Structures are given as structure tokens and as C-alpha cells.
Image (cartoon, rainbow, N blue to C red; front, side, top):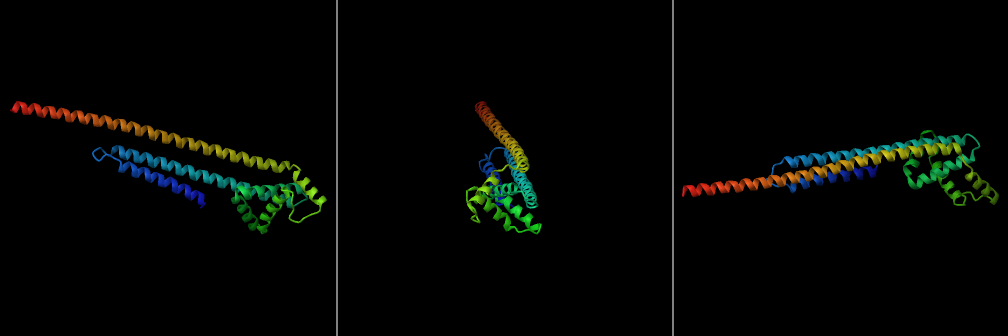
Length: 230
């Protein structure tokens, strides 16, 4: 399991336990336990919603990483089957970007290459070479003409590859929109919890006020009975 996911789940669980502990520690010992149980149930529901949201977000991210690694491996195989230097350089540049921003994708690509009987080290080597070329360097120190030719190849458009990457990015944007929608639902649940808590506080104040009135009425009745008895 991803360390980031473990930390997120632990944070949500700890926050939920802290909320439950706060409800029962600050509860009025003379009041009924009904509202404490209601608050506890709402906190548990909110915690479960956040856990589901966190797990769904991690699962969607893992799915996108898997699809992107599949696309990169397929593009790499396509580039190696023919004379397609532009596509090869584009794959290397994308691997270089992923190695900096999302190393999980590079690891998945290495696993797929290894499963197919290839050399996993070639993935990082391709990313490193592409990064050096994009910076105007070369791992093999070619001549000036060769460097210019390779730089020109890097700048050549790879329309088919770009369409595939754009499609993956659109799916990533769609996943982000779903995550944002789930986050908005969580916020709505939290707002409802706050509203219920405020209503409960108002009800408690009314109950206390009624209790004070009843105590006052009892006291008056007792005083009246004492006066009549005297």
C-alpha cells in the first residue's frame, strides 16, 4: 500500500476518534445521552465518507498511472520496431517528466518491460538521455551536426503519440473532477453535521430552560404548601 494513502487514512481515523472523544468528554453528565449518540453517529458517517473518498482517489490515481505506463510501453515498442526517432524521443521526454513528477509510473513501466523480458534499466537510461538532450547535452557526446540532427528530431511533432497522451490527460482531468465532486459532498455532510449540532445545542438550551422553570414551579408549590401548613 502506498505510504501517502496510509498517512491519509491514519489522519482521517485519528480525526474521527478525536471527535468522538471530544463529544463524550464534554457531554453534560446530567443530560440525556441521546444527543451524544447522535453526534457520535454523524462523526462516524463523516469519517467513513472521507475514508471512501481517500481510497477512491488513490484507486483512481493508481488506475491512471497503470494506463499511462501501458501507453508508454506500447509507444516505446512501436518506436523500437521502426525508424521513428521523433516518437522515441517523445517517449523518452515523457519518461523524463514522469520520473520527476510521478516516479510510480516509471516503476510500473520498468515492471512491464521486465515482464516482457526486456532490460528495466533501459527505461531510466532513455529518460536520462532525453533529459540531457532537452537540455542541449548528450550522454554520448556526438558531433555538432549529430547533436543538431537529434535536437531537430526532438522538435518534430509526433501527432499520434500526442493524441494518446492528450487522451490520457483528459481522463486524468475527468478523475480530478470526480474527486472534486466527492470532496464537495464531504463538505456538504460536514455542514449538515454542524447544523445538526447547532440545533441540538438550541434544543439543549430549551430543555435546560424548561427544567429551570419546572424547578421554580416546584419551589413555589412547596412554599405554598408550607405556608398553608403553617
